[in-house]
Length: 349
Ligand code: F1P
Image 1: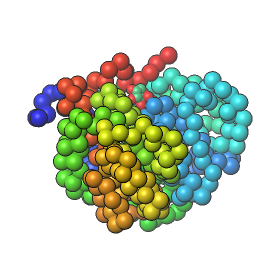
Image 2: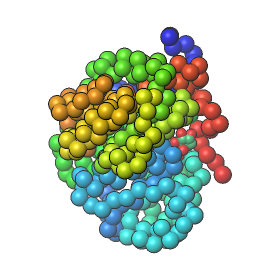
Image 3: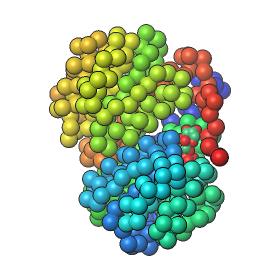
C-alpha cells in the first residue's frame, strides 16, 4: 500500500512530530516567563477544559499537573461548564486552562466566558493560534504555532499542546529534570517511528481484528481516550477506552478473538497493568503493549520506548504509534484519514 494523495496531510502531520516538538519546546522558552501573571491569580486548583481531543488532552494534563506540581487539578468537557454552571461553583478557586487547536470551538469559548463571569479572572488559552476566537478574549497564551494542521483529526496539534502543558508543569514545579527530559522526546522520535510503524501497519492489515480496546491509567487515561477517538474518526472502527484495571469489571465480557487490547503501560503501575494484558490474552484477545521498559510485560506485540524519561514525560510517546495505527486501518479500509466521515475540523454552534 503506497501513500498517495489520500491521507497525505495526516501522514505528514504524524511524521513531522519530532521536528514540531523541538520547535514547540523552543517557543515555550519565550512564552513561559510571560505566564507568571496568570499563575499569580488567586487559586487553589487548576481546571482544564476542551472538547473532543482537547477534552481528552485536559484529562491527561490534569493528571500530569497533579503529579508534577502537587496541586489539585481536574478536567471537564467545555459543554459541562457552559451548560451546568453548578459544575463551576467549585471553580471559584480555580485557574482555568482552556485548550482548543482552532481557538474557535463555540463550547470552549462559552465555557471560558462562563468562568470569567463567575471569577472575574482571565483564563489561559492553549492553542495553535494566538490571534483568534478564544485567544482574543484573554491575555494569557500558550501557543503551538508550528503544530497547525490541515487534517480534521488532531495528531501533532494534540501532542504539541500536551507538550506545552508538560513543560509548563515542569516550569511551575521548578523541575529542570522534567524540562531536560522533554528535550529527549524529539531525539527518540525517529527510532520510535522505525520500531512502531511496521507493527502499526501489520496490525492495521489484520482485518479479523475489528474491536479495539485502549487501556490506560493515570496520565495515560486521557491518551487512551484520544487513541480511541483517532481510531473512530479516521477508520470508523469500534473502539473504546477504559481505565486499565476497570476493564476487568465487566467490559472484558466483550472480548473475542476479534479484539485487540492495547495497553498504554506506565512504569509506576506496570506490574498490575501487565497482568490485565496477560489475562485478556488468555481470553482470546490479541494484545499490544506500549511501554517505557518491556521487562515483565507479556504481549503479542510490544513497542518499547527506552527513552530514559519519567512517566509524566514518556507518556507522550504512546501517541505516534497509535495515530499511525488509526491511519493505516483507515487506509486499509479505503477511507481518507484526512477527511473523516460526518466531521468538521471545528464545531461551531
Ligand atoms: C475540538 C474537536 C476535535 C475533533 C472534531 C471537532 O476542536 O472536537 O477534537 O477532532 O473534529 O473539534 P478544537 O477546539 O481543539 O479546535
